[in-house]
Image (tube, rainbow, N blue to C red):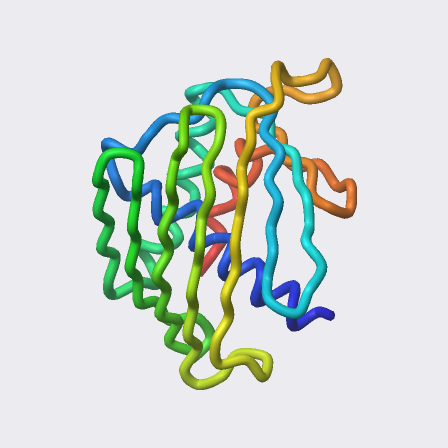
Length: 170
C-alpha cells in the first residue's frame, strides 16, 4: 500500500507539473474542483480542490519548481485545449520517464492520461498508467478557502503551505 501511495504521489506531481510549464495552458474556472485519480490495479481516489486564479497558479508553480531541480528534460506543448508534457526526472536513483496528455474540454472539465516508466523499478514497478479527471462543481464551500486540497483520506492541506515547504526539498 505504501509503495502504491509513493508511486501515485510521484505521478500525481507529474500531472500537475506538466501543465505548469506552459505559459499558455488553458485556465481552470475558479471554485470547487473534484479530482478523480485512477491507476491500474487500484481503486480510484477522489479529492477536492478549491482554487482561484492565484492559487491555481501556485499549484502549478510548486510542481514546476520541484521538477526544475530533478528533471533533465521537460518538454511541454500546448495545442489549443490539449497539453502534452514529456519529462525525464531522477528521484532516489530512479529515472522516471513520463508522458502526460491533458485534454481540457472546457474551463470546467479536463482529463489527463499519464504513462510513466521507472528505471530501475521503483517499489517493484517499472511502468504505471494513471488517469485524472477534473470537474468544476460550483463555488467553494464555506469550509474551504482558495488553495485548500482535501485528500481522499479527508486530510486538508493548503497549497500556500506546500509552497512555503518546497524550499526544504533537496
